[in-house]
Image 1 (cartoon, rainbow, N blue to C red):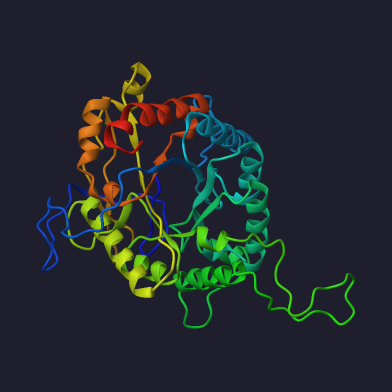
Image 2: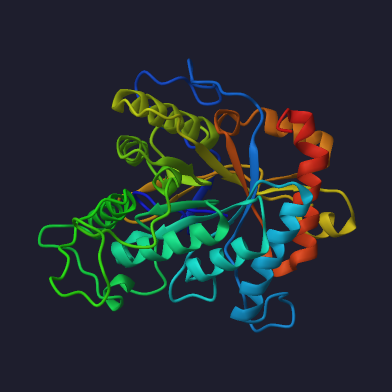
Length: 385
């Protein structure tokens, strides 16, 4: 699952869980819980469908990924398998100080060298940890290796494994600045570097000849700037992302802003994002992704792993003392029932891209089986294929 902290970001379950269901609070002027928001911007039903992996690993005989090497190599293998199955994207989550995937660009470059068509992305990179200029060089190199297929999701980040982990990476907020604001500052500096314009004064006696004028970072990958996404946990940060000209990633967790069911709140977030995009006057059309845990029950393995239920309702919790969050339901059912359930998810209907969270510790073959089941047994019936 992809999750979000109190502002932006994508990644830890709300804690503690206080209640099931969508809660009872509703903002003035909003439609009642259970009713889809009016006048949302509908888009064609056809969708890009990719997977999202956290790259969990554990030195346990029950885990299919028992080391960091297993998690990395199997991520590459799954990208190859997903491409062969006809999926559109292979995305990874970035976590520091954890037995998960942490350094995305070597992995994305390796995926790019082993695949030909599939999009390769992150969801998300915590920008509090990043040097924007070094990241721009690494991203440019990985994008060129892939032939221009990177789709990089950034964010402010999620609750951490350690206290203020970004400090160990040499970063600290400026005076009067929060760590979230520092993350957004790093993101805007990264976006500026991706424009490919010169900004550094050349040395009068350089080791190698320079082109005329100020120098830019190299390697530069043309078009990567338009393939940057922001993982938003609130309506406000979605609007901010639109104004910056970034695509939108929305997870299975967001701030509970109206008391409505998760999928309706997420659809409202997408609507606010698109309205802000239009107001900003950007020339291109934006992309919007949502993530979901979706498991077609096709055989005894599926029923053993995911057929016991328990995740059919939204959950409410607090990410910190002041931030009430809503965590969206999962889906696991026989294909016909799954299709009917997904028809009612208004946020999926609003998005052009769907990221499927996969249980990577169950191994490449099983994850490929889940992806294939959705592509062949579910997506066509919903018009996604």
